[in-house]
Image: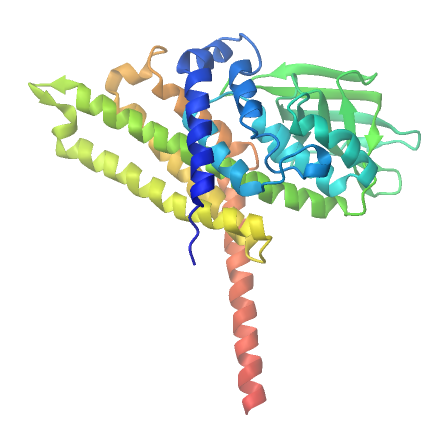
Length: 378
């Protein structure tokens, strides 16, 4: 089975890369790092113009109806460019919440603006801590923490606990009375976080037929795949930058890249990146086809891509030597991004447990089937 992308998807990737190279040089990334905005507006405009935000949205909802694979290759280019954009939160997470948990009327009302990039949204996953309380009058009391793009997003989707114990997906807007937001510290200021306090905040309750837990798992799996693509792009760029530096830098009369220790360092990064690529591409197929292997494939991609980006960022920084520890070098941007992406959907240890659990369940099922066949034959 061939898990590579089609020629059309590769062309789409190239156009996105060119657009981001023009719109989002490192100088734009540093503007956001230094507090000049919540994201790089030129990069976001470029993604919207290229049709990235509309790629995985049905035509009846204002999208292009292409599919998640086009969105995945664009996410890889966002990671490669280190582009500070709300693509992951708005299109990767929030769009899926609306698609899975929203009613047909809510989908028709909210999805076109997301597809056109006219509005942005985010999701407070609430993986840790107590969920906010949903009152009978449609208001919510509680607090959401570590919400990515929580200060800048027009809308926030989150889960809340109703009085009857049922969990519901809800939607709060920036204008919702009783919704207060404040910035939280982030290891990567180009991907800001926010805490959102809800004090009898008026919200919309999503009224689709899917259960809240099923929606959460679908959103996490989609997010894991798309974030893995972003990590893969970042890791490849970190390796590329490290290679360029060691070929340019000279010590004791020769390129430092000529030393065996440096060669081994770069080979280790390359091996990790290519191993992650196998997992990430496989997860894209599983997500596109909604294969039964998706939970395992998403977890495998999440673990492999997180490890590859962490290694590329750390070793790439070391390859830059003392220069890599200064604000002037770009390699610390990858170190920040690698740490942020490794934590935002739950840490690698959590995903590794899911991966092992899924593999064990699959193995148990296989053994049970084989035993049943043997007994039947006997």
